[in-house]
Image 1 (tube, rainbow over the protein chains, first blue to last red):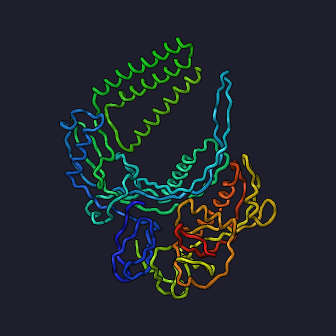
Image 2: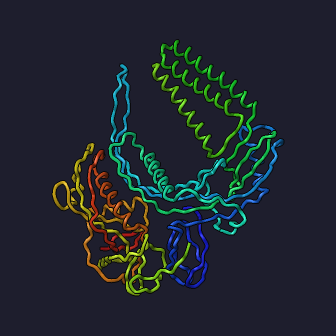
Image 3: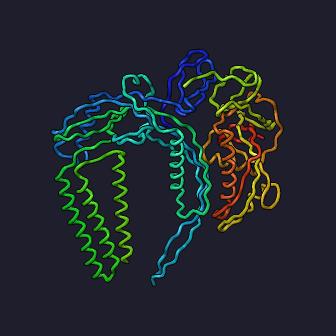
Length: 335
Length: 195
């Protein structure tokens, strides 16, 4: 369980009490009274205290500039324009899944004569597991943050009046639906039953919490272009950001990738023809094309390095996979 | 967020407990109530300890779900489907049964073991009116979830028999759910039933 607690006072004796995330009942340690928390429509709200100073956020950004395949002169040329903290709202929930997934797995065996035999192995898998889920409760715009990574921090509303707060705009019902879908998806993955013939899963949403999380936004300038990154207000780590790429790395990628891809493809075709096995050549050609494609992709998009949960970044990755799958299918058709 | 003192809906006495529990027991009138989306007073039973029970005595809460179960069709690879039907009272393809759902926090293995143990061999006991100073484990599973977990338990009981379950077309209708406290003693190997 995450280490989240809220400080309150007992209405009976005034003693300080602490309520863990998701709990709605607590016993006063001083007078033993049982206390019940009536939340905002059943949702517990928590705000984490900002633990990172402005200078630390800038230092984190500057050390982030040195990592990865970013422009080599970014640490020298980059200049921080402004740094400010914000509170972002997140839905967080814990969901228990209990049930059974039954079905079978197919294993293909090829004998010496090339005959393929399909073996069907029956499988049954029990699922009884708790899954955590979080999602941002507002439109994150171009911040590149969509879920919570850290769940350990001191709960306090003390900074609320000083730090601009994004209002929650998504509904808790939608968050619960998304959490259920996520939990079922994870449960199915953990069951590892490729062909399902029977499935009965029960989903139990256990606790729903609204967490206001402090994030530093750092805007900086590099060669007359504006970039931005975000820094975790508790851990001080960079959560997301855009940074300039380096033309040298792009050139090396496209040159090296083309050479490597070509060598793999040509070598495999030559070796396959000498071994009288066309499958080696075809496999090598496929690997070579994938290497070439990845090199091209880095060249195409390498002018800007993107880290975090950006919508356009996800689309690019999905497109990449789709394109690789398309190439694989075409090669499958050739066979 | 507002914090209120919990009071008994039957006698209005403040509830005082040493442990966190979703079931609120009134020390004055022994009524138990829950606050899951509204105040509901629960009917419950307390089982008597066996006279030979030795060691630290503790009560564990269970939801006893009385359900009607009907199997329409089934398919098992390398096994048979007779175990579940042997617990069902009624016709050959359906009937009624008591399903015991542990209501306290426990790991999945213990949950499964306890549920199948008491469902396959329903406990016989005489009842008493109070806990008699014995400890009481807190409950974390509510009545609504217990009904769904009952479905999970019956499939679990069948799936764990010889053979690999491939298909089970059935309906489970919950007729009644009652809170039952069963007696246990704490030993070196954990909690053991003391009926």
